[in-house]
Length: 134
Ligand code: CO
Image 1 (cartoon, rainbow, N blue to C red):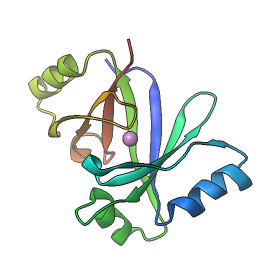
Image 2: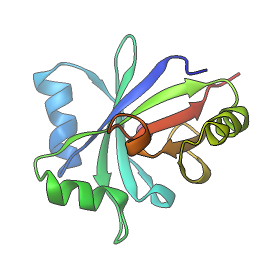
Image 3: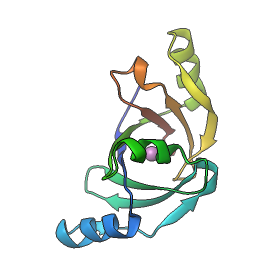
């Protein structure tokens, strides 16, 4: 069911500093900061030949990233995003298998539907599923 690894997300305490590290020290192609208020984050995408890195900084009071950074102040890997062909079909299959979906599907950073899966059902890894562009 899952397809390509769309991105690995890293929570960071300072998005500008993290983007500068990727652009400078690591020599990567780094996009602009993009606020996503509905998700409580500002994101920067680092484009790699085979996948992407999503740098996440908290945005707003109720950011889901704030608690993560409270436990890991220097940042850390936050989630993996896999592509699926059909998010509704993926959700139905996951629910039938007893996996816990965190909230309803939303529109994600790429303008495509996304949903998140409980890390306790997937070896301690928060998983994002993104419906691949047709
Ligand atoms: Co993501």
